[in-house]
Length: 244
Image (spheres, helix red, strand yellow):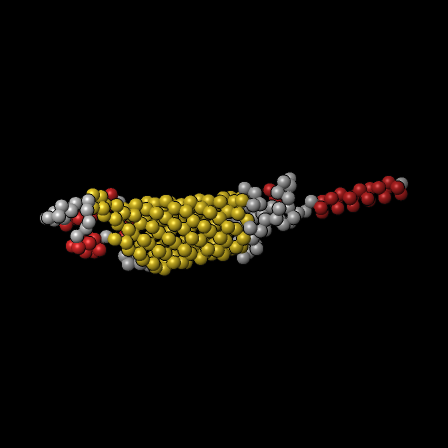
């Protein structure tokens, strides 16, 4: 009877010890562990992510009058100062073409400039593009940091650079009068301003190392004329704190 009691006691202790050994922490977890789904993302505080993304920019207000939608890419970094809050920074690049109506107006204008030109100067083509460079520091709040699907909202404050370039091609060397008009109405215009960016998005974890990220941002730029843009970004993030 005593031996049976000792056997059951040892059995219970062994089971409890085994359960304790199955209690992983995120740093100790093997990515192939059967308990990965439950514990691999249990804690977010202290984790750092670096991501690459592609995006679409849709200009609004005065900025959208002559600029069409554009594509681009960017980088984003975030550090979780707690399970729910992350602090980070992002840099993006969006390249857009100027609208056909605006280019047609410029073509008409410069064709008139050369109407009475005795040198035979003619406008061959008119092209143009605009590039938006937002650089922001961000603060984000995550609604469900312990789950694979993590919706969040954020606010970015930063510096925005816009580069507008209108290029007019002629059949021969441009006259001085033409160049003066070109300087007035075209050429390259580089502006930089401060602004802010409210946004919302979500993270979806594939595993301990890689996550997908999607976000929608509204960029409000304090410039003259007023510029704003709605951007959509999707990409992948890498957990820099993951231990193999």
